Length: 361
Ligand code: IPM
Ligand code: MG
Image 1 (cartoon, helix red, strand yellow):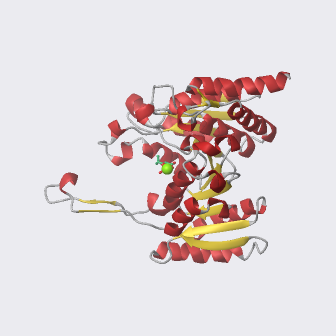
Image 2 (cartoon, helix red, strand yellow):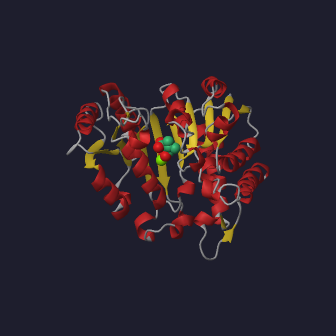
Image 3 (cartoon, helix red, strand yellow):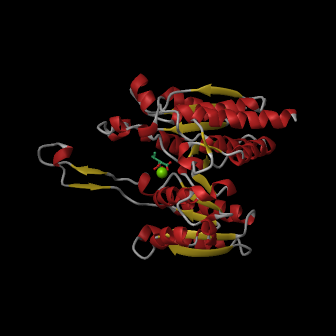
């Protein structure tokens, strides 16, 4: 088994280092190889996704990814910006199915900005389509003004599009995931305004005919955004397009207390996967040792379960995270009165300790 380790930028390097320690503590037999990606790769090689990094990713069974991006690259041409690295990996590897579970750990109920009764016991799964939609639509661009420069451009555009097979395959993923849970799917669209999402709704409805045991409802994205904070436990599996999924998963993460807790898995049709926290590179808190490594550590657990067939080890990580939270350790994003504030490294090492103690005991 081979894992490509791509820490990226900002807090990416700090949180991935902790997840790697946790993986090593499991004493499984796998090879890990690290490579540069994002702004770090641009600085070293002049491209956010160098050929060598892409090749390593393609040749690996799974990819552990940190985060990419920094304001200092905002002036670069779009194809050279750090974000293109993650978009390029998703597209090149066909990682169309993005799982973003939002689970509220009992120990963190008070860390959320929502009332405890709204979120206690929350366990929803956002399934975001990841390789289509306005993110990858063509044509796109800015209409150049007569002086030939973008600063003088009068207009910019991106094209929203989905094909039937793209919607069908993500709908199948959602219905199959729902079968293993409470058999309920909410498909989120904007069919009242957008042709793309009327089509989305029609195709999801067609695919649903193959899953009579699963309940399906449709919701407009603005309403879904509102319902998610009003009555989050009403949802179980949510399936939606790339852009709505991006936004709703950030919103859902705050139901769990902190975006620093939300892992994700992005899979292709061969179950090869990229695993990353749902949060970004947070350059404002980089190098301070305060980032929460738990989303990345929990992403590593998803990697063991989904791509490496090591469900038992995944359970060990998740149990260790729960026990560390129960012992009261908190990074600053999930800290509340009466708990103990720890650094990124202390949090990672506490998880390692919980794993090895279990193994010995
Ligand atoms: C995410 C991120 C990315 C996205 C960015 C970094 C390109 O926000 O994974 O949610 O928009 O998909
Ligand atoms: Mg996002």
